[in-house]
Length: 241
Image (cartoon, rainbow, N blue to C red; front, side, top):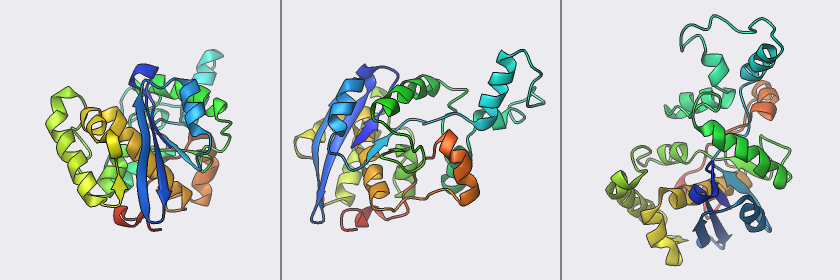
C-alpha cells in the first residue's frame, strides 16, 4: 500500500497494489483518504509506504526543548541558513541528498511539518513503532523517480499536467508487467494519486529487502528521526524479485 499523505484528507491519496507471479495490478487508488480510510486500507498489506517524514532532527528536538525551558540555545550560531542546517535536516535527508542530489523538504522548517504532525497520528493508528524498517516505511517518490531515471521535478499541479501525463506514460511503458486497470486516467490527472502509486512501489521494494538501510551508527539516530527508503533495485526487476 502507498500513501501520499497531506495535511488534510482532501489531498491525501492511497493506492493498493497486488504483486503476484511477476506481475503487479493496481487494485485501487483513491483521493480524500481519512485516517480511518488509511487504517482500513492497510489491513492485509505486507508493507505500507508513506510519503511523509516519520520524525524530526535530533538537534531540533533538543534545541526546542531547551528553548521551551528558557535554557540557553543548545546549538549555535543561528544567524545563517548554513549554521542552522543541523536543526532542519535529518540524517536521512543528508543521505538522500548525497545519493540523488535531491533535497527533501525540511520537517522542521517547511510546510511539510503539518503533514508530519498528521503522520504521527497515522503511525500510532497503524501501531508502527519501528521508524526505520517497520510495517510502514518512509517513501520519497521524487527520489525513487530520480533513482529509476525519470523526471523527478515539475510534474505536480495543474500547470504541469502535460509533464505529468508524459511522465506517467513513460512509467507505464517501463513497467509492461504493471496493470493500472481503470485507474490510468486518475494517475494522469492527479499527482497525489501517482505519488501514492510510487509510494506503493517503494513499499514493495522494502518488503523484498531491496532498499538502502542505515549503517549501524546511522540506525541509532534513524530510530528517532525516521529513514527514507531509496530503492536499490532496477524498476524492471521489481515484480520478478
